[in-house]
Length: 330
Picture 1 (cartoon, rainbow, N blue to C red):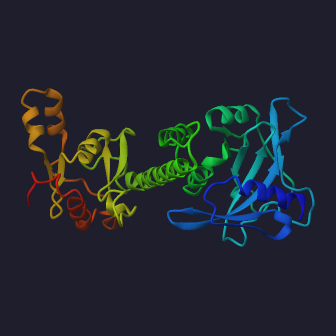
Picture 2: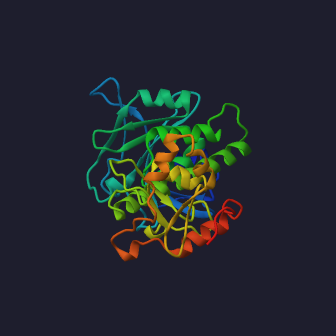
């Protein structure tokens, strides 16, 4: 077995919840692992290399693909696996991984280096995660091996979350707690991965929805980048879809009221109805009164008929939240 293949195996053993691992062609560049995401095995083409200092700049570190020409610099195993470039730093007691989405390097024929500031390694050891934006726009993740699945989930979901959002999710999950048991760590990583998928779905669908509504709120008409794409039948519900016809472009106020079930839209004529408590509050609160007065009688619909919200989405919403709309009737 080659040193590179042994390196791959040692790395694979540090990643939790691997379904299977094997060294494939080219002496382990890449090696293939399968990790369970949403209950389905996701193949990862793992290109493992040691991190080393870069002589050009004292603060810079790097890892590289092999110098020999008898192997591809990056492989996705004929389109079946997500290619991940993984640098390994084990110069201290705990190992730190440095990962990059390898898709941007597919098709390359030359040797390359992944360059990054060495400070992210020390931050990853102390905080569990640090993210560096390279001059090429690549996100470079330095992290402890236990959260590998979360980072992969983020990459698979097109890295749509900001670095701060990703870190908050991981911290709140408890995955980075000191002295966490392996069982608790697996549960925490699964929670964080689910939330990353959910928020990434909302973010990706939101842009499509806002665009369909010409970047205006469907309930009041405000624009000015004060909008969010809202799912009608919520993203966490079974069978939810990210199709535009399951969405509304809403300002923050109307989105908040919609999520709190203070707004009911009649599926038949798309008329907008507000909770009685809002009308009661409007008697003494000028802000609430303005909110009511600014709300349209009916939804403003997208120009394209194919994007118009479907009646069934509202009906499924009201069934899913069956106890929240007893105040509203057809």
